[in-house]
Length: 146
Image (cartoon, rainbow, N blue to C red; front, side):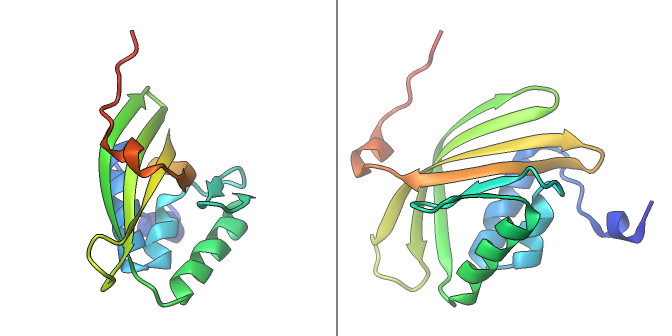
Protein backbone atom coordinates (compact mmCIF):
# COMPACT_ATOMS: atom_id res chain seq x y z
CA UNK A 1 0.00 0.00 0.00
CA UNK A 2 1.41 3.42 -0.94
CA UNK A 3 1.92 6.19 1.62
CA UNK A 4 -0.82 8.19 -0.09
CA UNK A 5 -3.30 5.31 0.18
CA UNK A 6 -2.31 4.65 3.81
CA UNK A 7 -3.43 8.18 4.70
CA UNK A 8 -6.75 7.98 2.83
CA UNK A 9 -9.89 7.47 4.84
CA UNK A 10 -11.87 4.47 3.73
CA UNK A 11 -15.59 5.21 3.67
CA UNK A 12 -17.38 1.92 4.31
CA UNK A 13 -20.75 3.25 3.13
CA UNK A 14 -21.95 6.02 0.84
CA UNK A 15 -23.56 7.60 3.92
CA UNK A 16 -20.13 7.73 5.62
CA UNK A 17 -18.77 9.59 2.59
CA UNK A 18 -21.75 11.95 2.54
CA UNK A 19 -21.40 12.73 6.24
CA UNK A 20 -17.68 13.45 5.76
CA UNK A 21 -18.44 15.69 2.74
CA UNK A 22 -20.93 17.91 4.58
CA UNK A 23 -18.81 17.97 7.75
CA UNK A 24 -15.79 19.17 5.76
CA UNK A 25 -17.99 21.70 3.95
CA UNK A 26 -19.18 23.23 7.23
CA UNK A 27 -15.61 23.30 8.61
CA UNK A 28 -14.27 24.76 5.34
CA UNK A 29 -11.63 22.00 5.36
CA UNK A 30 -10.44 21.69 1.78
CA UNK A 31 -8.23 18.64 2.35
CA UNK A 32 -10.97 16.71 4.15
CA UNK A 33 -13.53 17.71 1.51
CA UNK A 34 -11.31 16.63 -1.39
CA UNK A 35 -10.51 13.35 0.40
CA UNK A 36 -14.17 12.40 -0.12
CA UNK A 37 -13.97 12.85 -3.91
CA UNK A 38 -12.93 10.08 -6.25
CA UNK A 39 -9.41 10.63 -7.56
CA UNK A 40 -10.64 10.61 -11.10
CA UNK A 41 -10.56 13.14 -13.90
CA UNK A 42 -14.21 12.30 -14.55
CA UNK A 43 -15.55 13.86 -11.32
CA UNK A 44 -18.18 16.57 -11.79
CA UNK A 45 -19.29 19.43 -9.55
CA UNK A 46 -22.04 21.96 -10.29
CA UNK A 47 -22.54 24.73 -7.74
CA UNK A 48 -25.86 26.63 -7.65
CA UNK A 49 -25.95 28.86 -10.72
CA UNK A 50 -22.43 27.84 -11.68
CA UNK A 51 -20.87 26.04 -14.63
CA UNK A 52 -20.23 22.31 -14.82
CA UNK A 53 -16.73 21.66 -13.51
CA UNK A 54 -14.98 18.44 -14.46
CA UNK A 55 -11.75 16.97 -13.19
CA UNK A 56 -10.07 16.97 -9.82
CA UNK A 57 -8.12 20.24 -10.30
CA UNK A 58 -11.18 22.26 -11.36
CA UNK A 59 -13.34 20.90 -8.56
CA UNK A 60 -10.63 21.55 -5.98
CA UNK A 61 -10.09 25.10 -7.20
CA UNK A 62 -13.77 26.06 -6.92
CA UNK A 63 -13.98 24.77 -3.35
CA UNK A 64 -10.68 26.52 -2.49
CA UNK A 65 -12.16 29.84 -3.67
CA UNK A 66 -15.37 29.28 -1.71
CA UNK A 67 -13.48 28.49 1.49
CA UNK A 68 -10.98 31.31 0.93
CA UNK A 69 -13.84 33.84 0.99
CA UNK A 70 -13.93 33.41 4.77
CA UNK A 71 -17.67 32.81 4.90
CA UNK A 72 -18.59 29.65 6.79
CA UNK A 73 -21.65 27.69 5.78
CA UNK A 74 -24.17 25.69 7.71
CA UNK A 75 -26.07 22.95 5.92
CA UNK A 76 -29.21 21.19 7.11
CA UNK A 77 -30.14 18.14 5.04
CA UNK A 78 -33.64 16.76 4.65
CA UNK A 79 -35.84 14.54 2.51
CA UNK A 80 -33.13 12.09 1.41
CA UNK A 81 -33.93 9.68 -1.39
CA UNK A 82 -31.26 7.01 -1.83
CA UNK A 83 -30.96 4.57 -4.73
CA UNK A 84 -28.07 2.20 -4.03
CA UNK A 85 -26.53 -0.65 -5.93
CA UNK A 86 -23.35 -2.61 -5.30
CA UNK A 87 -21.03 -0.07 -6.95
CA UNK A 88 -23.06 3.14 -7.31
CA UNK A 89 -25.27 5.10 -4.92
CA UNK A 90 -27.36 8.13 -5.96
CA UNK A 91 -28.58 10.49 -3.23
CA UNK A 92 -31.17 13.21 -3.82
CA UNK A 93 -31.36 15.69 -0.94
CA UNK A 94 -32.82 19.00 0.09
CA UNK A 95 -30.22 21.36 1.54
CA UNK A 96 -30.90 24.46 3.63
CA UNK A 97 -27.65 26.43 3.34
CA UNK A 98 -26.97 29.42 5.56
CA UNK A 99 -24.06 31.55 6.67
CA UNK A 100 -22.67 30.76 10.10
CA UNK A 101 -23.39 33.75 12.32
CA UNK A 102 -25.94 35.06 9.83
CA UNK A 103 -29.50 36.00 10.69
CA UNK A 104 -31.68 33.16 11.86
CA UNK A 105 -33.93 31.92 9.10
CA UNK A 106 -31.71 33.33 6.35
CA UNK A 107 -31.06 30.18 4.36
CA UNK A 108 -31.02 29.25 0.71
CA UNK A 109 -33.07 26.20 -0.24
CA UNK A 110 -31.12 23.94 -2.60
CA UNK A 111 -31.77 20.60 -4.23
CA UNK A 112 -28.70 18.39 -4.45
CA UNK A 113 -27.76 15.17 -6.16
CA UNK A 114 -24.68 13.29 -4.96
CA UNK A 115 -23.41 10.22 -6.79
CA UNK A 116 -21.00 7.88 -5.00
CA UNK A 117 -18.94 5.05 -6.49
CA UNK A 118 -17.39 2.13 -4.71
CA UNK A 119 -13.76 1.32 -5.36
CA UNK A 120 -10.66 -0.12 -3.72
CA UNK A 121 -10.65 2.69 -1.14
CA UNK A 122 -14.33 2.44 -0.29
CA UNK A 123 -17.05 4.85 -1.38
CA UNK A 124 -16.12 8.15 -3.01
CA UNK A 125 -18.04 11.12 -4.38
CA UNK A 126 -18.17 11.20 -8.18
CA UNK A 127 -20.73 13.97 -8.74
CA UNK A 128 -22.22 16.79 -6.64
CA UNK A 129 -24.90 18.94 -8.29
CA UNK A 130 -26.74 21.60 -6.30
CA UNK A 131 -29.28 24.04 -7.68
CA UNK A 132 -31.70 26.60 -6.24
CA UNK A 133 -35.07 25.23 -5.16
CA UNK A 134 -38.36 27.01 -4.84
CA UNK A 135 -38.97 27.40 -1.07
CA UNK A 136 -42.27 25.54 -1.27
CA UNK A 137 -40.49 22.45 -2.63
CA UNK A 138 -38.63 22.06 0.66
CA UNK A 139 -41.90 21.21 2.45
CA UNK A 140 -43.24 18.72 -0.04
CA UNK A 141 -43.30 15.08 0.90
CA UNK A 142 -41.58 13.05 -1.82
CA UNK A 143 -43.82 10.64 -3.67
CA UNK A 144 -42.88 7.01 -4.06
CA UNK A 145 -42.78 5.67 -7.60
CA UNK A 146 -43.91 2.10 -8.16
